[in-house]
Length: 309
Length: 296
View 1 (cartoon, helix red, strand yellow):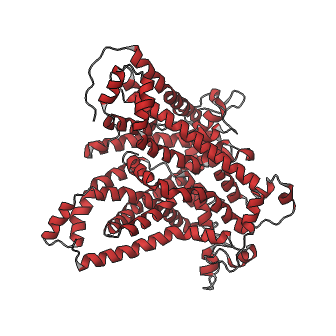
View 2 (cartoon, rainbow over the protein chains, first blue to last red; view 1 turned 60 degrees about the horizontal axis):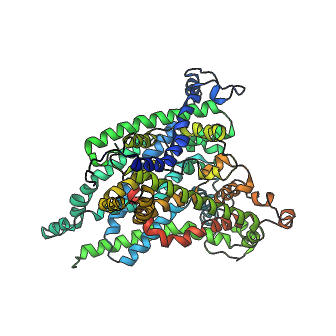
View 3 (cartoon, rainbow over the protein chains, first blue to last red; view 1 turned 180 degrees about the vertical axis):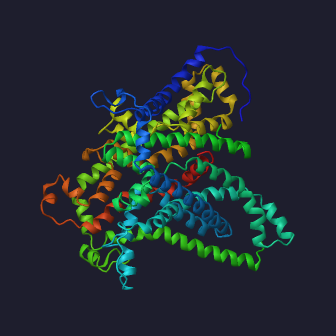
């Protein structure tokens, strides 16, 4: 990293341009991040449109009490957390297995082809993914209903009305879109393992499975732990696109597809319920803040290099 | 290298697994492509199939006739992506260079100012109120560019670290002795040397802008300003959207809309630029992922 620069006397000719260079970024952060922090107070106000949203009188924790009492928060919080746990488990075990297998392939051309293709879904916006999912699940024209269930004389399934399939669909879609991304990560971790370990193990007569068990997996440990902790820090946030676009914001599915982010969106934009949505979003921001601090503290204990601050 | 029988068997198994996963990644795109080329009547009877039993171009013909709307959305997306990414890269590079300096008072404080938003934010509602009440960006091109994506503190720290570790100090010092000002050093020396990292972060920003529909969902209601993703989002909710917002009298009136195939055709048109350019930027994209994820 950087060597210590020579201490020079402070001179404006050097410093002033530096301040000017910082100005656009600082101005943006103030507009985009710091001023909205004041907006947190909306969650503690009784809205009065005559006075304006940011000038309404305070009413303490009334909005939060109302949010908790409404019974809305329970299911959306449960969905958010359970989906995140499922994504975490599937998104760790599956990509690692695939990455280890991928590393066994020697043919460079095939590797390139596989990796290029698998990463492609990651580049697609959730709107596009929603179209792709629709082509499979639509009850009138979907591939599953028309080409698989119909020839089997099974009656068609209205996927966008039936709750029970969605936990699987969402976990699957999330993994389908994300596996290329996780693979790039784990492959870079695998490539940093020195090949000498494997050669030594081979000479000692270790089987392939033993090599994986005693060399590969232990080398991935810190990365897995770090990623898991980072994911736990984000356990109260969800991918708005996944939960909004893929189920097509379908009402009958809300009880299994609604997360904090889609709830906030629907309450704000469709019901115009600013008090409730801001209470929910402030709740999310506060929990997120505490979890980030906590997870950084833990990472710092385990592996100081990966700590954010 | 010598490979044992067991290793060869494992490699064979790996090939099979990878082929299955690759096919699963491709299949939805193929179904979409096939669906877009299928006759609408056949689609109603048989649904989307990988091999259409009746080929038809009517969906694309419709889109071609409606090119006014689609073309405008394309143009809008390109403008948003180019202006957004350009501005973002410039602001990021300037701030990163400034933060990579030593012995300038106040930089530590600014650095903390950049870190705080990574830990704590006002939440969606506060941001929404901010951009509709305090700074009104509704129904303008700024609505796509400014909220959330323009400057990422994380990218600034990434680029700053790159500058600190791979720009030889002697280079900027020599330029300074020769009497070059900070801005001159930045544009003539720092920017060209930081091309790789700026290309990587810029590419991720560009993909974000190209794919974004959430800013539009919150801040844009005027269909004249719709980007491609916004048009796709509306078509997803209501397949008649294009017909009802058509500005060519010819199509709007009575021509039958191939509703089932057009869903897929418009999605195909939407992903085409990404699919075509992807092989060229894949390398940068992958390095961007590894760079960003460790501390993302």
